[in-house]
Image (cartoon, rainbow, N blue to C red):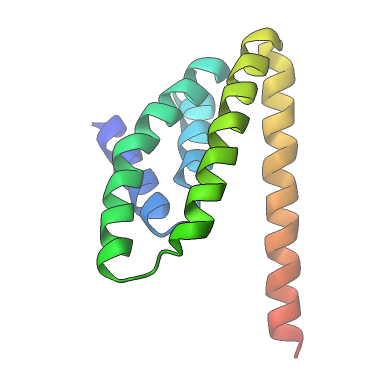
Length: 120
């Protein structure tokens, strides 16, 4: 039952374009004791259907710049292949720490944007 709840929360956040993967990986690693590499791979599989649905909705709402999307997709495929290769070679503890640093940097950036917005 918790998996359904976690999937729903991650799906909502993902559909909004915020990045449900960061939430899903954190939940799997911290609350369900899933290995970091397994959580990251699970997130990739989770991403396929959620991104398809979000893409269909955004196409219907005419919110996609196709030329940019194609270029970004090509670069993303190359980057994801490289990242998957590197992830198989890197120790799980290093991946956990790198992911934690990534989340902290995102939090700092979001806090900066929030302060900048409300300081005016």
